[in-house]
Length: 258
Ligand SMILES: [Cu+2]
Image 1 (tube, rainbow, N blue to C red):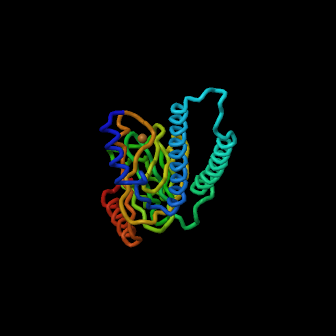
Image 2 (tube, rainbow, N blue to C red; image 1 turned 120 degrees about the horizontal axis):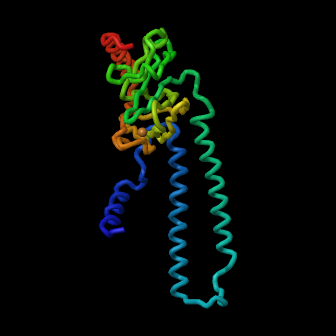
Image 3 (cartoon, helix red, strand yellow; image 1 turned 90 degrees about the horizontal axis):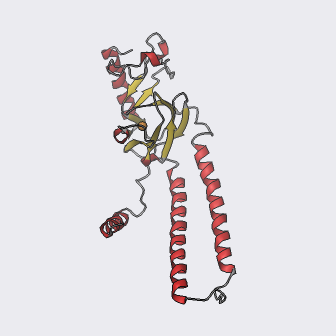
């Protein structure tokens, strides 16, 4: 690696010692804590391996002259193994909490749909029920990117947006779908990542805890436009969220969308 790249990396790390974007989700601190343990352990292993290598070269010892205590490497190795087993258990629990534990009954439902190369977000409206969608009705140019069926009354108040807006402090239950290939729904600032897979509806839930804007990325190489498959999460106050949703509903009625 060129020296100037190493120096630039060192400067970047010095400016942002944790390598991580600031956390805006309730479950984020536990995940960051685990990541820090991992980085510290890897850093110590890296330094120990190099120290051992340099010491071995300088000593030029013969294979029969063993001077280092033999038990020490095994103690370190056992401690490392125990630590990684503990980390795997914690990581599994954190992963399952966002997926298998189930959201609170009052969690807000939002559908996230990936399509080459765009994210769409659908809110169920006042009836809290999503309308039926049909693949043959998908027509982005005609204002119906998700294929909402106008005959289904439950879809009359559905709101489709290209921006994800969520109220702070309220749990959001996302149901992920894809219209074409596998996409990766990724919000680094929310410590959230889940695939959108064609033919499946995958749930992931989380609670945004800090007001602000957070980039949404696609973490699966899904085609030539993958790099520009980005969107924005806007975490706002509950009052601002209600105002935004009402404005979207009014705009939808005026446009006469399906
Ligand atoms: Cu994608």
